[in-house]
Image (cartoon, rainbow, N blue to C red; front, side, top):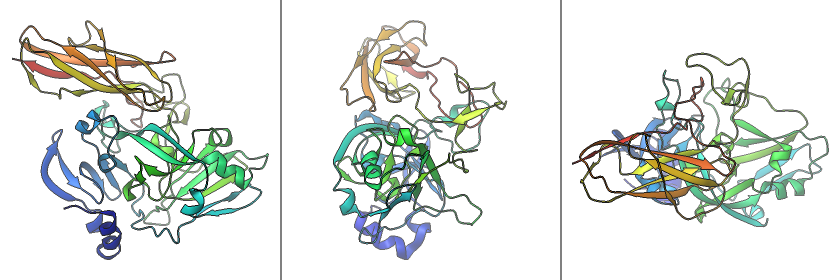
Length: 393
């Protein structure tokens, strides 16, 4: 069952969340999990329906740009916006500013338009692979995507509001809310110095189209290079604060061990924590898929993706023997330092048997990937070199 945006906006208010967001199961499976179809989305892997958590099947990552209808979905609170009337919606900016602003979508589009491609990735992408197991959404590798975002630079909006000299943090609030008063509202903050960087954006388009409802329509914060916990969806308010904002979703939530590896011995707790921020370096083999049977003496193109938190990928190396030997991969089109790159390596197996394919990426400042998982109690920042087994017949 397919929905257009018009269908979605018409039905969501009448049939409610149970039907509009409950998902429509299909008889299709990906990576051993059943797929569901939600409004404006293709068949995606369902983790939860309230709040919606939907994972992208890996075959969509064969494309350099992730289609809007295939991009993963992650909400934290159960009551998410069912409809937004742009005639009524306003983005309010205030707090420690010279003036308060109320921007309509028309007003937002008056600012100089910025466009770039950036990976969006959930902090818990890969959580299901940690041992011992960690509570939370059991994402495999599909809680990410590569999207071309367009919108207004946050620094231009804040300049119009006039940030006062003693400002410390900028706080962002979306239209979602908890089902009970005791549930903390989802608010995130950025230090002022970060908020006024050139590439921080209030996006109103993804891949040249309006944001989908499930990905934050009508506007969302984009913090390229950082994990998506900061990318607040369905924005309604921006507040400039005179002190450090440390409410629930900044502290104690979304924290990592405060040490160079952001890790602790499995099952233990860190002495000190810090907010999770920049994404680490990752690579992933997309094709061939795990379990594929290949023909002996027939060339096959191994392909995958690699990215880092705002630093370009320098090189990718590939192994077909479980890490014993490595060869350099060919890197594809460079869409900028926030985008992922696609890489490929041609391999012609000359013997039958089982083979383990691996890939390891390094960025421009020398950061790479570990052979062993670096454990933390929240299941964040998974970037272990992964092995993918194929059978040559």
